[in-house]
Image 1 (cartoon, rainbow, N blue to C red):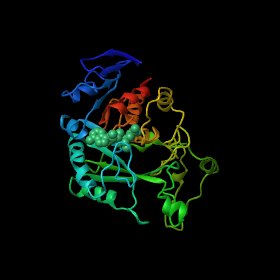
Image 2 (image 1 turned 180 degrees about the vertical axis):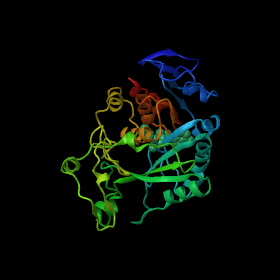
Image 3 (image 1 turned 135 degrees about the horizontal axis):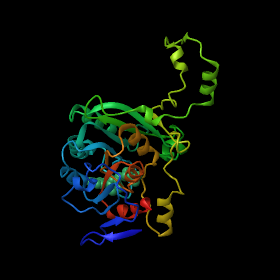
Image 4 (image 1 turned 90 degrees about the vertical axis):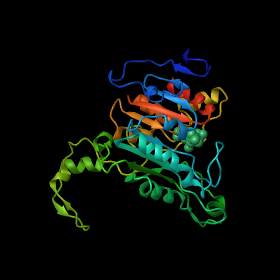
Amino acid sequence: MIRKHLNAHPMNTVLDVPQPSLFAPTQAHAKTLLPCQEPFYETAAGAAFVGDSAELLKAMPDASVNLAFTSPPYALHFKKAYGNVSKADYVEWFLPFAREIHRVLADDGSFVLNIGGSWNPGSPTRSLYHYKLMIALVEELGFHLAQECYWYNPAKMPVPAEWVTVRRVRIKDSVEHVWWLSKTPFPKADNRKVLNPYSADMLRLAKKGLKATVRPSGHNITSSFNKIESGGSIPSNVLEERTANDMLIAGNNSANDPYTVRCKERGIKIHPARFPPTLPEFFIKLLTDEGDLVIDPFAGSNTAGAVAERLGRRWIGMELLEEYLEASKFRFG
Ligand SMILES: C[S@@+](CC[C@H](N)C(=O)[O-])C[C@H]1O[C@@H](n2cnc3c(N)ncnc32)[C@H](O)[C@@H]1O
């Protein structure tokens, strides 16, 4: 529901969601960090802008962002409706965005990049384009690789059909890379904010008490492994989703979320390459505090912005195509 028009552009709106004072008076609304342009819409915590993020990022102040969480168009063999850059040009295309992201990040900020792999045309072999990008981000721009993570997405199609389902000489690709990069070696992070519930086995062991022992790997298992009061088990770097609280297996084909349902009801095109909310949720919790600023320079249906809003973080979304941002308003009620 749209409440009021902001200015001459008929699509610029403030969404009619409760607008509590979420942030300390010293924390300006996110939109003030991009004063060169009116937001396409804004909420209590954030603002979405239509435009080329390579340009929009240039207007943001240095060191103003705590987390840039994004999934740019990949260099795919099968192109999406919004267009994809070729593998050969990918690094050159992406570096200007990454340079600006590096500049706007706070010293303890993180840049989390979700990127998919790709096949070489006409051959059952994999492209190295995303590894080349990673090397350029670290060696040319000075990012640190804090950790490589993987998104296990069981909903990915078994392609290329030629190799996977026809000739049967390759297996289904079910992961995407999620690279956690940082401006310094010590970005703000706290894994206690993303603990998983202990497994039944772990709880049973804790009850029984664990004998101090040395594993065949040489690791000392001491009584400290026995402490259950730490609140949960430390998640692995393979992100999945089983339940909302338990970050494990996340398909991105959810047919029942309010965004998808409302797009269908109104005959609006659903964004073809959304990530599941659990992906930004995990990293926003791990890497930011309430009131921090999260940006997504390739916002699409603004999944990251909606999650940031729910978690009490300020956010800025940037998206080239107005139709995607228009539909993304459904995420805010
Ligand atoms: C993989 S999708 C992101 C989807 C998003 N994570 C979601 O959950 O909906 C990449 C998006 O980047 C947008 N895009 C491509 N080039 C852009 C640019 N220069 N500036 C801003 N957005 C751009 C595309 O239109 C597309 O919506």
